[in-house]
Image (cartoon, rainbow, N blue to C red; front, side, top):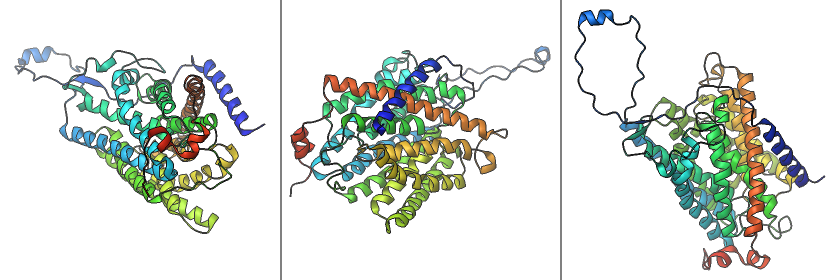
Length: 471
């Protein structure tokens, strides 16, 4: 049986397992979803009680929960983090992907990333935010905050304005959708890319974000650890990309003619911008200017550097020399792997994570890619899918306080590892099944692929009527 048929069979089996498992109860555990409150008004002065009255008061009155108060330092950091995530998408991701393609498709890649980043935040504020963070059940939130209903400039999410939290989360949704385009680049219709992204955002990103990050969500209640999006962003996008590579089909000439990156200079610039922007992605996920943000920040430096070094070392052993493409890819692999772990593991743990993720992702874009037989053009699954899986699983190990992690004193590594494996499995099955259905739907209504003639000429001219280069 071919790999493609095995993959389709796995998706079908996963769908059946999900249908059976929907009603299973979740194990409650405390999480970190922000609480939304109104900013407190100035309280009137209250006279001190008379001694007699004080004596009549209960000996141990329950302590009132502290009211949320706006913190300007936290707010400033979260505004900065939001801008950094924008930077890592446009132009960071756009240039990284654009350089990996052929020159005749450069603008088509830039256009897809740019327009998805323009569109998805609009959908996020209309219904996405509400369906993720406004209460709800195990898989979806509610419509209570549709069109950001009830949110004002004075509404707080923790210690920051809720508008800032909404904006920050909108950038996560946007870059996740944009990551997928690297898998089917150079041959998919622009209208089909947009239509698929809208549907996938609604039926895959939103439920996964709610399951992992929102109180009441299936994996949140289980106690799954995902600091900044290993499951929600990277595994989710990686699986959608792999399914897309199968569904759209291989590029004309794939495996028969060379398709090298047309500009590794652009790819290196893009990778560097991704690394810088990722500090907002990871350290910003602490939702405060705090020690937790500092931990995520240094881990983002160390894991990324370790993965780049490990990738180049492995590449040099296998091929005799290290490449700029390998260094950039290794760095992104480290960024992906540390995303779920950034606030839960120690600095030494982040180095170990990077050293493990680099060579595994190198295998993901070489040996595993050949085994799967899919034309994943820019290795979305090999780097983001595999890197996200490695990071999510090892978070359950490296978060142990005995290994320098931030886990509680009674941290149970085996138990947490099972939770992490469950979160990875659910993400793969949910996204795989949903993506398969949505690609089929878009193919029936719009059609996924451009014509052979358009693909040969290049999507810059045939889809957008312009060219990136004039020489």
